[in-house]
Length: 263
Image 1 (cartoon, helix red, strand yellow):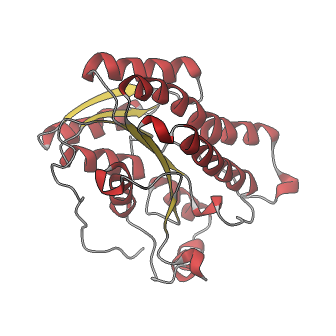
Image 2 (cartoon, rainbow, N blue to C red):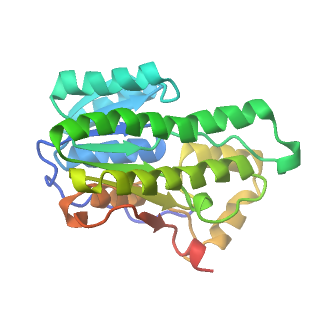
C-alpha cells in the first residue's frame, strides 16, 4: 500500500509531566499513539496482552528519552483493568490521559453465518473492554478533578460494514459509551471523545489483506485520497483530542478517514 512522507507528532513537549495510558499499544495505532505521547513529553503506560510487543513499545519510548511502563492487561477482565489503573497510579501518581484503543476484528462473513463465540469475543474486547477501562479510569480522574479520555472507534461505528456486522455493532456501541459518559462527566473537568479512523496500515489490516489479496486495491480505491492512513496520522488526532487545544471538544467523534464517509 502506498504511504506518505513520515509525519511528526504535534505538541512536541506539550504533554510534559502528564501521564498517558494507551491500551493495545503493542503494535499498530496503539504503538504509534504511545510513541507520540512519549515524544511529546508524557509518561506513558503501555498496556496490552502481547508481552513482547508491549515491552518493545516501552523500550522504544525509553530509547527516545521518554518514560514508559509496560503492564500486561486483558481489558475484557475487570480485575486486569483495575490492576492496570492501580499500577499506573502507584508508578506515576496520577492518570491524565487514557486512549482506549485495544480491539479485535476477526469477522468476514454475512450476519446469518455468524458464530456466537466470535460475537462474544468481539463484544468482550471492543465494548466491555472500553466500558471497563472508562469505569476505572474515570474513578481516578474524578479523584483528581481532571482528565481526558479518547476511545478509538471506527468509521464502522458510523456506517454499515458488510460481512462485519458484529464489529460494526461493537464500534457503534463505543460511540454510545463515549457520548453518554461525556455528558455525565462534563462538569467534572473530564472530557471524553472518540476517534473514527477508516482503513489504517496496521498488522490487523495486513491480516485482512492476507485473507483477501484483492482487498488492498479495493481499499485504496474506496478512499478518496487513494490510500489508507498511516498509524501516526491517527495518533496525531488522538494527541489533539487529549490536548488543551481541544479543551472545548467533548462527546465528539473525530473522523480520520481521508474522505471515506464523505461519499
